[in-house]
Structure formats: structure tokens, C-alpha cells
Image (cartoon, rainbow, N blue to C red):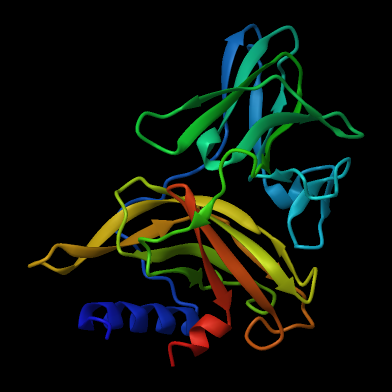
Length: 287
């Protein structure tokens, strides 16, 4: 039998999902965007974040993932928003993206859009101490659009289902004033039980989308644990709130209803393991 505290959290999450209401967290959202550091010249350099769904040279694969047009098989996939650099002429800069450590089984590399295809750049990766997170960086000397792409290999490490997580569900945010609520929803955050350390990275990916192509937009995004809520002061048991970047939006076909016509799996990656949430079946199991 589940503990009363856990039941209350599940109840709160389900109500939040059904009403599409987002519970604001106490901590400010942490952005998971790439960074550009000027190394030489380029005094007029400017940068702009390009949302993943607006990146050039992309196709939507059968699983709904955004893939490079020159490699649509799904072997490599975009890991998030890209960066557009202008005004670098005669200079050089370091482009970096946060990613997963190679020990997780994911291999990361930075690519540049040439106007026809995505070209792989020499990429160095450094792991953060005592973490499964890393930073991938490349030195560039020309204007253009850059993005991080990842591939997964089972050769050395296989990601397994998280054994220490009982549930992890997303929060769906309400449309802003003046926005049409009938074809998209914000993925603003979520909850994890048992809780994780503050700052832990959580990545979601939408897979097994049915009908295929019915969901577009931010089909993959990374966020962080920004707040922990104690359920039982006596035992210290707590759950965590996760926040995803602003404007993390999933669009669905106008002729479909997200509540009755579309099903999908939300696969969460955190601390080197994954946890699946099947929509809407996992909601029904809590009735």
C-alpha cells in the first residue's frame, strides 16, 4: 500500500495534468541553452538562440524526433536549441552545449549547417565532477548556425530503467493570454518521487507517438531540479520539482485532440537511467 504522502502527491499531479495547470516553483527556471565565448577578433559578433523546431535542415522522423536532413535514419538526433552566430568575420569563438557524459551511452558532437547539410565539427567533451553531465565545445571561425547532435551506442553502456524512482510526471502549462489553447501545450516542469538533489538534470523525450507526426515542437528538452518538498519531516522523504526552459512547447495536429486522439510515451532520462510515462494509460492506472 502506498503511503499517504505519496498518494497526495499522485493526486496533485493527476489533477494538475487534467486541468493543464502549472504549479509555480519557488526557484527561478534554469536555462539549458548553448553558450558562445569570443576568443579573438569578432568585435561585432552577435548570437541568437534558434529553437530546435526552427533549425534549418531538419526532418521529423517516424518517432517524431527532429533529425538532420542528411541523416534521417535516426542514428543521430538534435539535443535541443541551436545557436546562430553573426559578425564573427576574422575572429574565432568557442561554442559550448551542456550534454550527457559519455558514460551514459550518449555520444555528442557539435554540427554546423552549411546550407545543404549538417557538418560535424571537432568537439571536445569535459565531464562535470561527480555528475553524469558534461560540456561539449568546438572552436569556430565563421558565421553560421550551430547545434548539438547526439547518438546512442549500446556497445559499452546500456541505459536501464531507473530503480530508485517510483514516478515522474510532467506539468502542462496553461496558454498565455491571447493564445489559442487548441493546438499546443507548454511543458513547464514536472515532479519526481523520490526526490533528487537540487540541480540534477532531467531530460524528457517524446517517443511512440500515435498517430505518427501528430506532435511537433519541443519533442525533447532538458530541465533541472529547482525545488524539493518534504513529505514527511520525520523521515525526510521528499519529492522534487523540475523546471524546463521557457517556451518549451509541444504542438499537436489541429484536427486531433490531445485528450482523446493522441497517445505517446514520455521518456525521462536522469542520473544515467530512464523512466517512462505512457499517456494516457498511466493516468488511467491511477484512477
